[in-house]
Length: 251
Image (cartoon, rainbow, N blue to C red):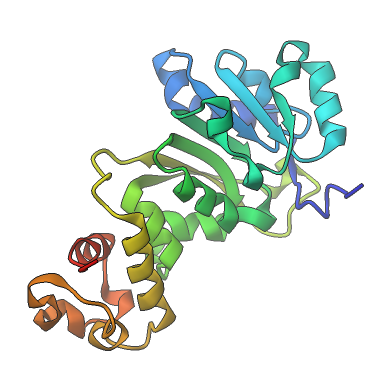
């Protein structure tokens, strides 16, 4: 059996922080029950404050599955022992849900790509991430932007909620932690994810080149390549620039 350390599990042990995370959820503020998927609950420090929701729990470690089923007997059939990254919410008819968790730091980027994969169904996500990942996704303090940041911010609004002290975890992580909120943007269905991903990947794979060189094998509408934007490099572009370019690609 894998250890918690091997699974990248770092458990929150402060109930006040747990309450603060859950209370930042939309449904908590509006007193409405909604579908919630909790990832990696461990012993259930967040779970205990999510019981008013239509809750589904995903836990990869069978030891904690047994602990949770004993602690929350009414949830027994809604605690699933599976790798979250392989979980398909549509199998449970979850087409409109909130994602929450103290996510394993070893799969932070994979969690974010999972959110993109099911972007049409995830309305909101609140999660614990390494602080450097949180800063980059929110683009706090004008951190160097990444391709993943562009993709997330094209479909979601991102908000930095608060920094979390290492002393509230067991074991204590070696990196700083933070909680961020990711909220689905409205009217973004007209952005073709396949094209946007291609544009972002191409630009960031050749980030030292001007766009006119990195995009030379991509065709754009209305002779777009003659515009001044193509004299820029990737770090000079905004999220809006990338979504604009994606809409101008000739399929």
